[in-house]
Image (cartoon, rainbow, N blue to C red):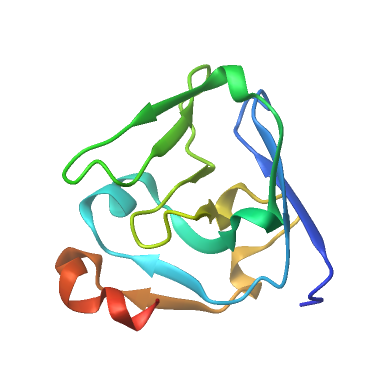
Length: 125
């Protein structure tokens, strides 16, 4: 995909909207309990390539374990379209399923063993 592409996305009710600059590569499918339950498909985006357009006031935060990851979700509809991951606390993990006009079938998704996170995190850093 074009490295200059600007992707748009957000939550179900559209209260939260964001932009992220491409390319859409390095996408991960994680099998940890959180990602499995949410259906989250990760695209790690550096902070300087991510912009929250609307909805800062609608976001709520959930943390657990080390409390490093900031699991942000829309307080209106409950969708987690992006969050600050423990693996990249200086960026965002965007849920590819929440991007506009992106067909997940057209995206190469690499598996990541998040159930054994500590043993595998160096693979994606």
